[in-house]
Amino acid sequence: TQLLEQSPQFLSIQEGENLTVYCNSSSVFSSLQWYRQEPGEGPVLLVTVVTGGEVKKLKRLTFQFGDARKDSSLHITAAQPGDTGLYLCAGVFNDYKLSFGAGTTVTVRA
Amino acid sequence: EAQVTQNPRYLITVTGKKLTVTCSQNMNHEYMSWYRQDPGLGLRQIYYSMNVEVTDKGDVPEGYKVSRKEKRNFPLILESPSPNQTSLYFCASSLSAVVWNSPLHFGNGTRLTVT
Image (tube, rainbow over all chains, first blue to last red; front, side, top):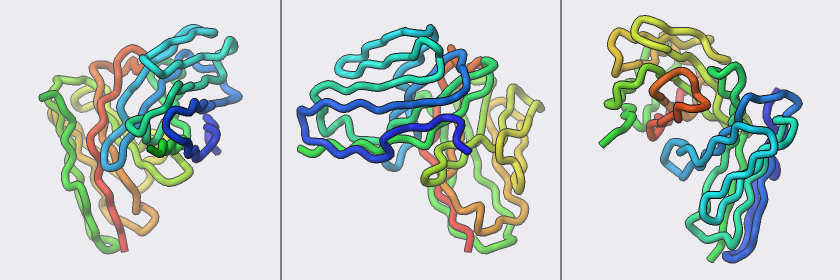
């Protein structure tokens, strides 16, 4: 049973479109992280959100942590082919334990 | 260059033949961890180590062993591999075990096939 549910599992869009990836759980997390993984490589941390309701922006990427700290979303504006990859959310609880979602595979077509 | 290095990148073996996947980091990180990644299941933690000679089980430790004799190395040992251990394995390290403020750095993965 996955502690963190990500949706959708797959997402294919045209360059220039917007997209949103969701990460939901029934558990409360002390913080939540988003990673991007490209084929043949390990995941790379994009952001950590800590406070309920927090919004962080990283260029065209906007990350939001739910008020109850049980969910998060990643929104990409004007997606580019370089945004293609597997996006993973990971919930942190007890400061030491990281639990990953199954990931959302994003494909941006030129 | 700061990195986590895993070897080998690809490994095909047969059931029951002991194997070791090596992991080394050059960042003087205290915390190291092994994950396996399977389609639809995400990354699941196998074992982790908070420092030299300190190791503990993660979520899926059965069939695996680890050791942490030196700070930089954290090998993953499969004493008797079975087909259900066919997976993509990642080693990761971070400065401390407090993961929310100490980012995990991942290696590039080892794809293991057990026939």
